[in-house]
Image (cartoon, rainbow, N blue to C red; front, side, top):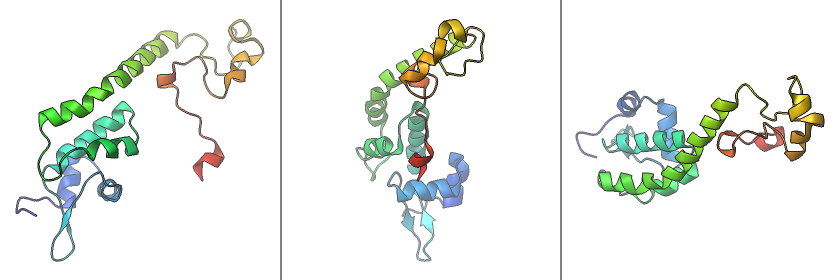
Length: 158
């Protein structure tokens, strides 16, 4: 490691992340560190760019395995270039456009039925009689897919 390397605390403070997140990202292969003779982690400054990429990718909706796959195409021996980042982030455009369209539709439809199956709104008797939306599956069925998160069942958490 170069003498300009950063401790885990310095990286955490600079990246705005908990040290436990850094250890987890390292365990998951998203970032790498070296060790001092005493076994303490040391990070190259380029790890800050990788962490910014991880955060941006998660904000777009990428799962960690997708982030890991994307980062695996970047060099560890040098700081990624703007061209590297452009190549990776260009594939996000369609996903972002879909999310933006979904959020606009959500904003516009907040005062009407979203097909949640609650039947508590007066208009539900007209918009969703007999909870027809519930036949299409759990959750708010009329929300655009980009803003409808999958429903987690208790058995999915184990």
